[in-house]
Image (cartoon, rainbow, N blue to C red; front, side):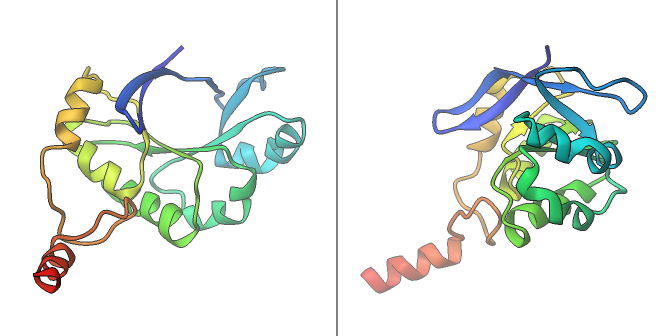
Amino acid sequence: MLKLIKLDQGGPAWVEDSYFDVPDEEPTPGQGDVLLSFARFVEEGEALAAAGRKVGVRLNADEPVEALAPHLDRVAMVALVFPKFRDGRQYSQATLLRMRYGYAGELRAVGDVLLEQGRFMARCGFDAFAPADGTGPEDWAGALARYRHVYQTAADRREPNFALRLQAAEGA
């Protein structure tokens, strides 16, 4: 099974992936959690969720998150695929899922996921990562804590620096 880096209260940690990533051309396993393409989820997802199984959806960068929005109540995990390091469309998709659609389930970054992206991915709402560069939770903990201040609001709901300064000035 694939190992993932998952964010929790104690920081980044290795976890075993409980989802079977099912290619479109293969049959769905008879039991366990499954990760399906969006097209396959539309066909089979409702029946699998009704059977009490956790269903995840894999969205490629060229698939609009808006199409998934009406189904989010039946989706336990969304895996956003980064096709290459330079392709940032999935940052926007993650932000939309968290902030516009209120998605509270697991949001996973897969594909060409590198440590340098970790801090930005976490700010956009990702909470699980399948790193492609061989890095581990210790590396990710350092990258996520590298900068103390942020300068705008984001899905992680951290207080921006200007608001902290204003609060300090009002309290003085």
